Image 1 (cartoon, rainbow, N blue to C red):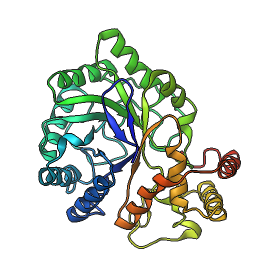
Image 2 (image 1 turned 180 degrees about the vertical axis):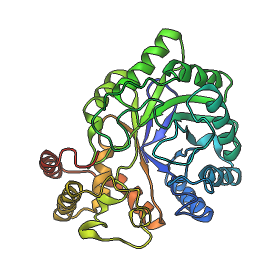
Image 3 (image 1 turned 90 degrees about the horizontal axis):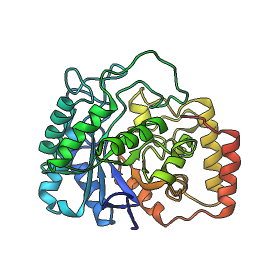
Length: 346
């Protein structure tokens, strides 16, 4: 395993991290503990959770992911060797179940969310605490273009940052980050931190994959000049880049088979792009999933690539992508497909 120092912090994260949003829905607690055991044995030290997990969010399961990880931490006993990251939910969206009444990124909600997460995780502090999605309406979660709106959020970015600062001073948070954010949001948070002597965000967790390279448009430049690096999620596009859903296939137990909400990568353009990328992998005798992950890992703006798996076989395959280096010929073939299918699934 390789490790990377996050700029403007003392955090050293493994270049592959463990995503956990299936823990408590598709994965039992025993499954979760087996994944955590294996990941740590392979040198992974970044464990990423969220208060709203597992996904799809339901009142009956909300918080189970953190509970499973907390029980494992209590048994494992090596908290100081791990980089534990969680997220506070933004305002309720798309008719999802609310975690709390009047859910917002204000001081009260952040305090309650953090307290509950620490309790479930059985720890006194988080190494990284992230805003899961913005307070304001903007283009995230599959929306590529920004839609003009007259709506102004009641909760300001400054109020959110001040709340996070309070809990950082209390020692409950080491560093803060954002997720599903835009260049405007990142730069605004950095400006407010500088202007008001508040903590600086150090990471951004956004989707990035062969099917969604929108991070390269504006955020990659922010990363280079401001050092807010990417924790890449959905790098296999909900498993789509394995090729297992091609030609209308619905594998038993797979996420897109079980849950109709996961349609972001199911459109015709996306499926055509997947077929082309899988063909590249086959021609170069590569595993499609490992090729997709190796592409993400090699990007200079990526601090760590989060792996999400529902089986140990999938997790092992994904971890082994660490040993895959893409040739110039493979990269040229990938760029040729990208020119044809530039944004097939934002």
